[in-house]
Image 1 (cartoon, rainbow, N blue to C red):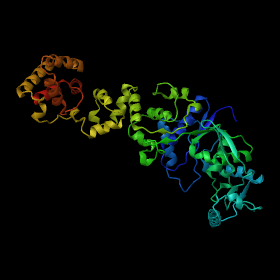
Image 2 (image 1 turned 90 degrees about the vertical axis):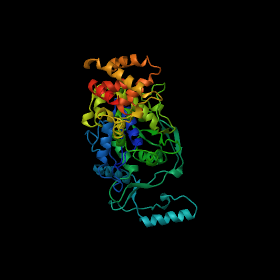
Image 3 (image 1 turned 90 degrees about the horizontal axis):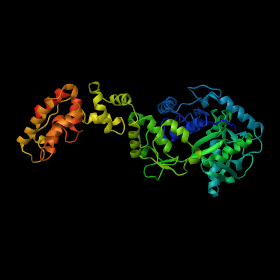
Image 4 (image 1 turned 135 degrees about the vertical axis):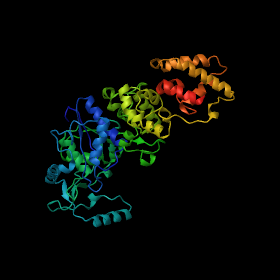
Length: 471
């Protein structure tokens, strides 16, 4: 194995980009970066029946949004290309010929119907079906018209070490002859990924638990080719919120770019996914990318699945929002608002009330921001605080109008506004007699930000006009 760390993310272009796949890419990326190694993106498109048009571009858009940039791949050419499996068919044929020459690969002599008949007969006898038990002694030369099968050289138990799971093993029953190259000329996953990992010098293979049962097949291929396998790093599953099954679409799993559309920050998704199955120790939960690279450790990956938690994701996103500059906040908030609401003064107010930037659009659609550009309509009854007399409310508003009129436009800040109004409110039996009517006069809402902030954003002229209307 090469001393230099080389990892890869090798998705199939079948449409939906699950968060589990992205986490696999992230862990491979972090480990490569931590060790100053190479991170490769490889597209495994040999299952043409399941391929979805546009999926390759979709995969690359997801990784690009998250900043998981490959060192080599379809958009970053390197010495190990091409990086799309359908363009590597001659390489697979070369390795297939090596196995044929060793007597460890043979053309499939049976039709699909014949294999199904063998399977039915075996099941009727109450035994598991094994293709190797129907293997012929002699074979014709393989010309590609029929599938090419791997001939298991030795029926034995396998033992191997997994970085996360430790020492694992499987008995002889786990091994059977399997297809290397299909009749359409495309290799199977079981063969192609091994050839590619060998050719590209992959040192660490990260993938899900569903591949543990297939590992004896992989090891048999490595043995047949007389090549040492890479380190296997089996990642825990991402579980549904109830923790009882793997996260799926029915449990609310979304395509990765849906989180982008919802207004989550890519930094949040990187942070959140890194923590799903990995614990660096300590109380700290908010990490930037460089910090994650520094602390990432394969030995601290969990075996147990991690539950998806939307509330935790929202909390983490809010924490990352706090780290943005004023300009970054404006850019993210204004993209969800019409241009006539692009007022920098409303940014802090909105920021306090969102966990993701998509919330801004929802606030606007619910009319929660209308009062910033529309004079509110309200009934007199709404201006009354509890059982306070109407004359008292009117008098309090008039005093407020006079006090705010004395402030210069340049001094019309929330601090000065609050100071002027609280001098009046503190003399009342209950501050609510003043603050509730003013809040409602300015916003037309029972619940809104405090009136001092609203007044500053509206400006002196509009604030005075709305108080006069209320009076």
